[in-house]
Image 1 (tube, helix red, strand yellow):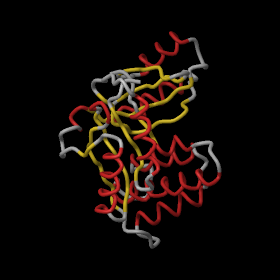
Image 2: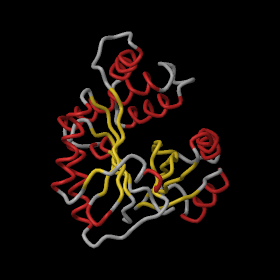
Image 3: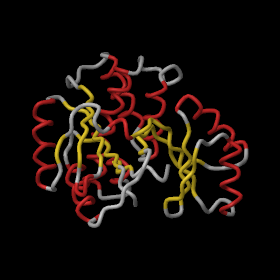
Image 4: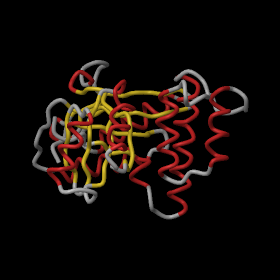
Length: 238
């Protein structure tokens, strides 16, 4: 495993202008509502998915009132859009494999939009199951690399229970099975390690090289601009 090539729209927008931040909050509210609806209720103590997305919402400084309102829409306490989650499998430039996750109030419309974007950047939709087998579901715990010397930080992560680790710029990505993530986080925090963020990701089992990575990035950007798309994962080797 060598990096998760996760183009996350919410993270991508962090720190941008107010308009972009508002769009990120809107996308995040949908994620929270779906987690409350499909993950087992509005209590983050008993709903693992909800707990994770609330942490992500706090990372982008989403107001508490917005979070609580999104939870109530998911549980039906407040009226809201009729939303459903989706996962599309696709191929991009150079034959890279893609998993596109999102939330929509009209799946047929979103499917048409995603098809159009893919075709514009030499990509195409794939049949169900034709891409997903190339990925594993993993918790990605992100740690700032400046906290300790590189080798010491790697050793701490391994001793904490990491399945795998990967450096991405100045951050250490720590991968673990979702059911072990809370234990790994606690072990890291007990060692004085600050966790920057965590997310439940699709991690590619193998990476591939392509000649024109710029085309891939343009596709990622175009997909990310779609309001219904939340996350894009690929097996592109960075």
